[in-house]
Image (tube, rainbow, N blue to C red; front, side, top):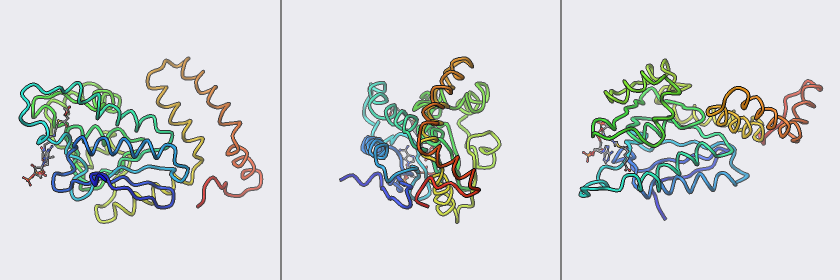
Length: 259
Ligand code: T3D
């Protein structure tokens, strides 16, 4: 069995840890396919409410393992991306559960794309991000040409991509590349606490919220309004909604989860 991705479940939070610390968790095919398979299993596992992706050691993910690319003068990068990174990013974005990217250290190249792909991005103060692709004369991939301009605008995205300079946690927070920054020594505990708070929120409503946000990114206002109306019907018919209303009426805390 592959050891490139470790998996641990605690209080409905599944933590998937990229586990090649001596290479700053640079991505091999084995790592990428294992991570995608673990996400697909998480999607149908009723014990999992929230997924966390993080890295072992001092790195989050240094992007494509450049050792695996060596020696091939005409690599099939299109085929490789379609077989590995693209299904991974789509698995994260379409998972009907929140995916948190917990960026513990450096995120470079496709590792930066992975860091950006989460529903919420939690960073350690020790984390940095570099759109390192241009330093080896490649273009940004694994979704970053889609994510980054939507977060910071096309001009700032181009600047980050062209110079590949390292963005630290303070700058990332200001730019909107992450939502929370935690001290390195408390990072794992803070991420688990955040994920458990999210796991106690209504899972069906959160799945529909993620679906609505994904849809809205490619839709005009009229289509987004209509899609909201359709999904709201599904939310309103779910038992979770009844629990929320009952809790409101009786001035008690709603019980959406086991916590
Ligand atoms: O289809 C396709 O495959 C194309 C897709 C491409 C997508 C991409 O991701 S392209 C971009 C690939 N990534 C990079 O170019 C980043 C390369 N790494 C770096 O620039 C630096 O390592 C970092 C800025 C990430 C971190 O620097 P630093 O000084 O903190 O650490 P370091 O000493 O450079 O790295 C530590 C070790 O990890 C080192 O090994 P050693 O010397 O101790 O034996 C280094 O070689 C190794 N390492 C780091 N990144 C990679 C790597 N090994 C393989 N692949 C890497 N990407």
